[in-house]
Image (cartoon, rainbow, N blue to C red; front, side, top):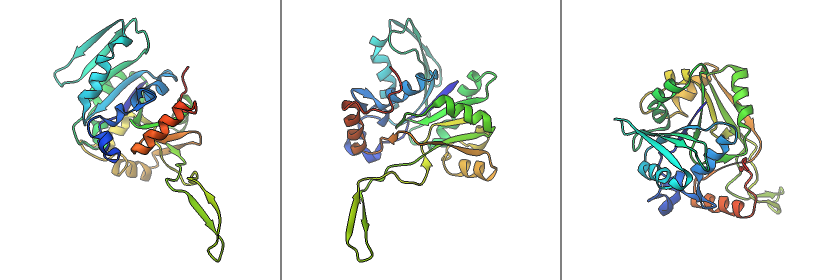
Length: 263
């Protein structure tokens, strides 16, 4: 099953740390967040990736090519569209198949997905489903259970709903305003879209060349009762700011990397 990773956006909230390097290459424990994400998918047997590149996309291509120490031999297949396919031979470390797709510098999420439709159609075979995720969120999600949930409900689109953690500590007050207790960055009870999607290829009928996936396409799917949520209550965190990156590295260094689903 193909997995599409949306890793073409600008890391504007990372400040100077996202100015000269794509967010997907910012490191956790000495490896890019993209590597961690791909390791999660590969640990569930999902190792056929299409990377939707955009801002500083060449840096992501270079990362895979220049880290050739992972490979004993590899084949690089070029295409006129500027995309290429890296095939491994006797791979030492990762058993991955990776397609790099230049989907535009500032293309929106739905447009990026629409622009790799031909890769999905050419590889999907008899199974009409494929996975999609953002390039900056990590979780200890059971991807096999997610895919099975999608098949069982028979909708066009499944998203993963998660409980985010508050960015702020909360205080509890009594009726007179006296502080009774502090609650440091609690988990919020509301659900948000945590990414980790499974789509039927009919999703492409809802997309155009530069739409925002989370707006009109999802709104239309919801109206048509074709969008369902898989509830994930385990670890989930996205790397939106430099502070998030520091927290990811602290977890990794302390042995608390709950997203590490591989050996």
